[in-house]
Length: 164
Length: 294
Image (cartoon, rainbow over all chains, first blue to last red; front, side, top):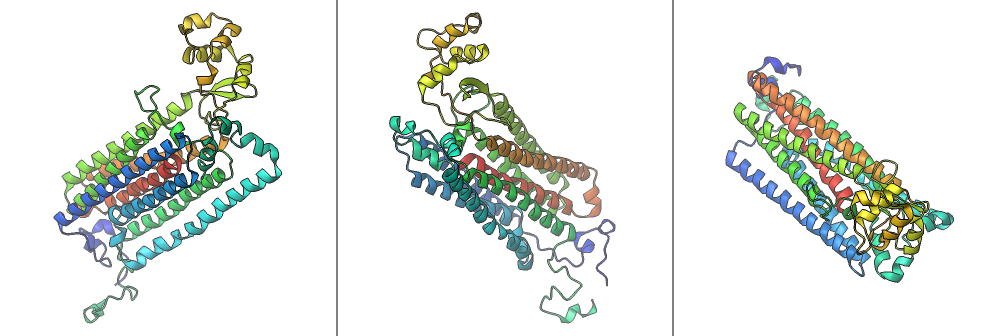
């Protein structure tokens, strides 16, 4: 038998695609429970992210913003976002239900992002350092004004952390 | 395929079976989405790279603090959280549409597709409002020794550092246009000088300059040019995906209503449209992170 098929002529998925053995959630209650659980999870993570966003805003407004603390909160938000992405892809898009070989052809190429992000962020950062060193005009015109710190001692570190 | 009866272990690669146990269209949708993920990833990483190359970058809580109907109230993150929830909810209704399709429940598919389309349109409406607000909402900026009113565009934005040098600002008032002075004197009057716009328009520049309270006008420098370009470029590209997703969903709805899938015996097309729609939600999660949260 050949792999050739014409889906429009057949009447059911298994007849249309005889080489595919469909394995869909037959249990209605189990499916509803899972969707509900994931929806609540995504909402809760989003609310936590928003709370952290407001927290960062208030740290910036404060008298002595702690740059390290802001960076830490931003890191937490990034991790929460990746968790959200995982749940959307594995539950809503059912990638978690596919067979392993298939999952790997999607996930392994995406690992390129690890290099991609590190390399380009480092490149941007290095460009900034080089310009600050050799292009004083750039440094003077773009760095948050020093007289800030005379009036509000904590203002400058806050601006610095804003770009991280 | 006569030998299948004797093979007990699944041999995915020995022919006669789909090695990924997936129909062709759905597999190709996955690979398209993977390549689209790289496109969005490249945009967002380029944004990150530029952001790290700057000494100053605007604080998103300063930029995105408006809410429709709330006037000048400072509400950071409020509107974008509404947009995020709209997209999450429309993703859930899409899951339910796909599930109804598995059961061959035509009515269910139609109902949930409608909700998904409405969610997509609501999101697009929110984005249109947000863009409109950013482009037309002008703020006072100190540029080349004079004060100008500018909105956020591809060529400039008013989100730079706050200028705290009041003598420089007072000096800048002398070269500022009449229109801007009227606006500033109206919005930020010194105590006891508040008057109507009509009265202010009749005054001379010198009179108006004396009435502006520069210390409380929150006048900023121009922000990094790249900020506007990246914001409109990436949220625009995402919005375009939402728009095309809505179109695809409308086509699916019409096909369902015309019994195309019922005659075919399966609703696999709804699944493929669903994958695309979830991807749009997935991208928003990252756009939300990069532009609004960090």
